[in-house]
Image 1 (cartoon, rainbow over the protein chains, first blue to last red):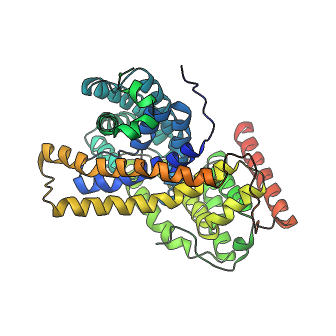
Image 2 (spheres, one colour):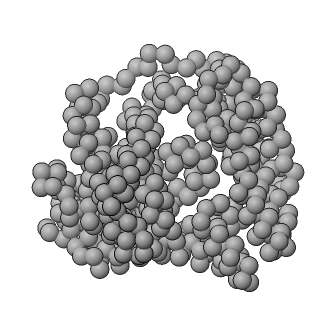
Image 3 (cartoon, rainbow over the protein chains, first blue to last red):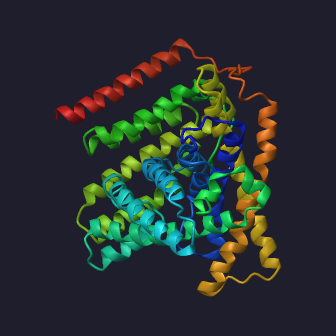
Length: 198
Length: 235
């Protein structure tokens, strides 16, 4: 069994900033496709599947700080616990061969969406009054306009976004893991167990 | 819009990066700890005044643009659709204060200077490298994502309907992710050849000076934070 604790080797120091870059660059692709999701945890989930939980946690932490700095939106920092939970969950999911099949990947992704939304909505509601100025807030506004109480509006808005987002994230990571060239896959032995091949 | 470092000459530019970072921390804590409505309003007035005095009033138009969507939705949700105008005002003031403070930090702090400050404080070199490297990687990968999008559109990618969008996600996302993973080998070899695992701590060539005024300012900010938290729990 491999040790879960990993020191920052040159390979990790190279991989983590690239994973952070993937987290932030996916926004461009989502915008081009006009899909109502974020896909801002693809890099974090990928790192969890390739090298384990601790590097994924570092990726989540650095991602959220970089998000905050690059987009000059300090509000993102309040959602750091969600990113860290995503990393923890993805680490467990990878250990349990969540990427063995598409159905498993979607199921684990939906599970993550459920918990991520449950973690995110109190932050959005109690810290920012239900307003995070993104697409989710538009849904919140519509639901509030329809007479749904604010707390439930924020919850349903977060849930609808996160369920789809995390299911697609897991599917995309599955596609990446399956497409890894053999030479590259050999450098990330955990990928095989994430795919249920060990 | 100013979203990053811009050269200037105010006293905030000369301040140690950790002093400006402590200012951001103080803003974050006190806008929530001090009693509403006076607390967040006072913090916002204070931080805006500091921006003027410190020669970084240029952040204020950007801060207004970033805060505008919050104010809009706060008014719609809490005033037009709801009946909590005070809540809208308090959250708006809190968010605006945080935005102004953070923009000041971004505008006056060169990322390299921040990394030098971290290294000079003997913070782990790996942490400093990760932050600096991520900040440099993001614009590059964003540009690559845009280039992949353009290339695939030229090749006939159509992103209409659910099926088209799913195909589009694979056609755009896979090259981006696999391309980034291909870089790992090259980068890790470069890092290994620079001796990142030798355990030696790099010495910054020009560490930012940490004057007694900086240390005093940080001390006062910490006292302000503790006092604000004490007020929160005692009242």
